[in-house]
Length: 244
View 1: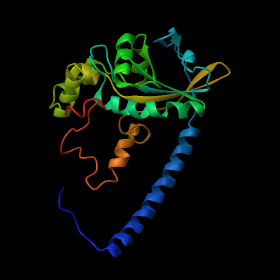
View 2: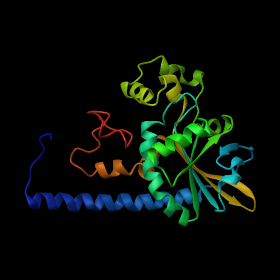
View 3: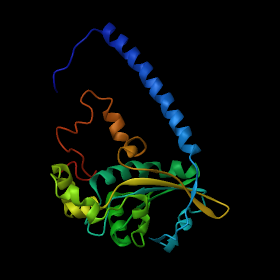
View 4: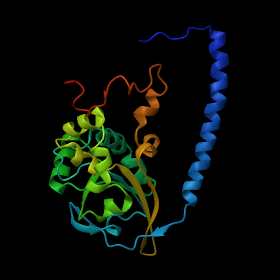
């Protein structure tokens, strides 16, 4: 544990009260942003995307499972991967626990990836995600159109530069090379169906996923040492911590 400033109870209470006001303001700001998300215009989905599911090939409309809203997490598990991305796996741990509650609220939540369906389902069984269903895209258009699939030309500047050791480690843990790993991108996309038409209502990626999908970061942000990202890439799949 690193050295830290020591104070009296009175000093702590004064600074905590000041911080609490800022936290309340952040909460109010979050409420306002949530309202702006709901006010975004809906965009009709005019392309016939297809997905492999346990029940056969389905359209995007066929993924709603009788509900009016659909939330998809674009999980980094490409055709060259032997295992799902470690970070995406930690996110799926959180999503899996919330599926019953999100479903009760009228929204179907699924994972979507490009790897073959049988490989996705085998990995889901390993991870114990009994609430989350997983579908495989037919073709590349769905992830590509949303910006979650990158071409070799787009990746060339990154691949020819100094690739961060963390990226190399994440690629190795997924059983692929760096190019195969960063070809995929994580993200979240949300849809609504009304009068038979499917609309895209929201898309987010990168750090936009932290608050809704990475609860452990919010918890660690409240500890003295925080996320400890600079010290070590401590994140593992949940069945790998004991071995590490």
